[in-house]
Image (tube, rainbow, N blue to C red; front, side, top):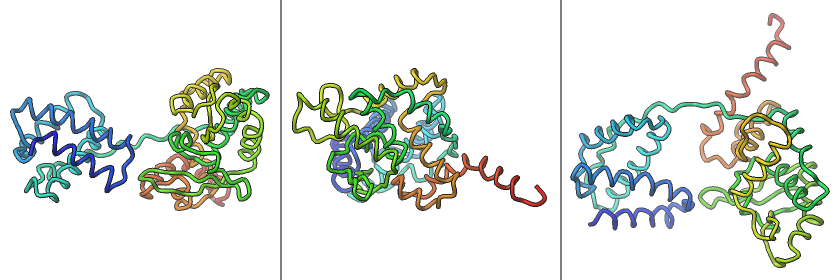
Amino acid sequence: MDVNKLLQLFYEYLQMERNYSQYTVTSYRDDLDQFVIFLQQQGVSSFSGVSYADVRIYLTELHQKKFSRKTVARKLSSMRSLYRFLMREGYCQDNPFVMASLPKREWALPQFLYEEELEQLFAAVDGTVPLGQRDLALFELLYATGIRVGECCSLKLSDVDFTVGTVLVMGKGKKQRYVPFGSCAHDALQNYIEDGRAKLLKNAQGETALFVNAKGRPLTERGVRYVLQQTIEKAALTMKISPHTLRHTFATHLLNEGADLRAVQELLGHAQLSTTQIYTHVSKERLRSVYMTHHPRA
């Protein structure tokens, strides 16, 4: 079967059977499109015609293009997933990527904010105007729950339960989870919903999205990054901060205060505990402090 038709079948499989998000499917598409271009350059017309020698040449090209180890590992994972699908469906007999070794992963420590820096960020928001009330509620919720920016933008007003203090989040793979939030996020959200959001929706009645922009339309991920960057400049914070920084901060602060790693995994919506364990590296500073303070011979 034609290469493009096989790829289309694979993308449908990812969406329909694996419940992958559109963002994840797009990442697969980018990786596989690059591989198809490589095959055309090599004169290989089908996936079944790819040999291990071709794989070695492809990996060499990736390294020559200065791709990071993490990126190469992701591309290899995409190829392996494709070939597992092709073999399952009977379009290929062998997986030429099965012998390709994944490069060791680079563990970059997540960037996070200290409590003083968080206070600076929150203090830079003007809570007397509708957009400021929205921004404060947005930042408080991101820090209070550790949810991803995409998960935050997809929240509906009905997903917030003030009675028990939880928000219903649709995570990766369309998996739902309830995440609690504390009193600071509660107050900021309530103030925004009752005052700021109502004013922003004066020309867009019926909108169900929790966070809206100045025109009363759903706030996008790009919009969240923009308002966060603007607030950072007002707060005179010199470090580079993204919405994901607040997620890193959430996890790091919990672990520093003694939270169970598996509980943090559930709150973050990580499928694998190993993904959550990267935050324990950040918390070693806290562990050393505890040791030096409490060990008799420290």
